Image (cartoon, rainbow over all chains, first blue to last red; front, side):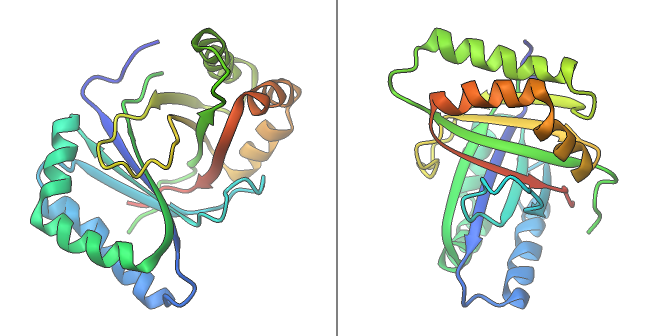
Length: 106
Length: 106
């Protein structure tokens, strides 16, 4: 098995609060996507909504996947003022979330 | 924002039970990886362990990411005898899991 050289995937699964409007969710997603333009170690961003049929999603509705070159890059992102400002707004809108980082091995 | 054409990511986050040995976990991961050789619609497989520092991983320790070309491909995978046999063994070894599918948009 081989580790993909220098890649750390930063995954966030979220369920938004019931009173958060679709417009507000859309705005948060746009702001999340825009972090890639503001925070150099953040190399890529993808997101999507749950399309699973197994009913094991535990209520999570959104997946956000960011790509970094190292765990140091993730730390720089987490501490970046643009992330801190965004994270405060994002966290106040979610009912639950999981954030997990991993180095993909194939 | 653009949807990556014809790609569905099938994500599984897991925490193994405390009494499951590292050897057993390694065996399960090898068997999971081998499904890509047995189930045609499964196009790629990556996995990794949590390296996050934010302490928002909610106890999950492993990420497994499989790639399909469609939600129909995921359904074929879920119903495939090789997956059913594996899933029964895997599920009996995990304390908790989330399974979520999404079509990555960038």
